[in-house]
Image 1 (cartoon, rainbow, N blue to C red):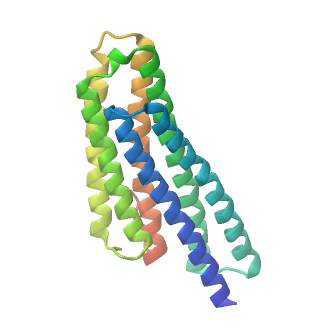
Image 2: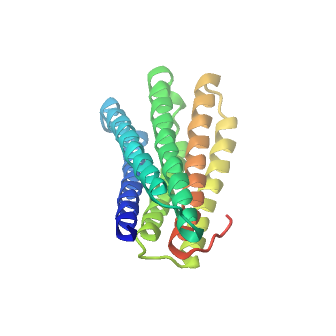
Amino acid sequence: MAKIIMDEMKRTRDSLRSLLSHTQEACRLTIRLINGGEEPHGLVEQILKLEENSDQEMVRITENLSEIVGKLFLAGLLKRAVVCDSVVAHEAEAMLDLCQSVAENWMRILEHDPQAVTHEVRILLDSMLQNCIVMLEKAIDILDGRDISEHTLKFILELEGNVNQANIKAHESLLLEKFDKRSIIRMIRIVKAIENLGDKIKSTSSYLLFIRTGEFIKV
């Protein structure tokens, strides 16, 4: 029975890895969308497809966790690990929703007021997303057990700090612009969504570290 449980938990972790990898790819596609030079609708479709795939992974994760809980009375660390798996899954799904929101708001700006997309804001958004990609890479390392030290989480916190700093600069820049107010509001939504993405990766990494070490570090 113990082997069956561990195999099912491994399947859950594999699905969690897929969700985090999908989010990484969505960030890369969003960077390409923001930097221009490619057909934007195709990039948005790819982001939406990744979000759709995440729903399928969530179904698998929910079914796996339900089966695990139903097979025996879980105690101590194992029970907490199952709860953390569930939290990580929902946070990862929310990350892809944020990427979708960024892509859709960006398309509305391009369609209605492309002049609102300034070079400075492009650079800041690119920086925020690049930091998120590295954070996700480290989160996957924790999930796979390749790097489960406190230093990894500290590095993730530093990257999240970079995201927050870029967020502040982007807000300051946007509030000084004289473009259509609707475009500025949409751009602020984009910046805020990416900031929330970084925050969710940070939180998820803390839960993943707990799953691997049994030590929860509040972030």
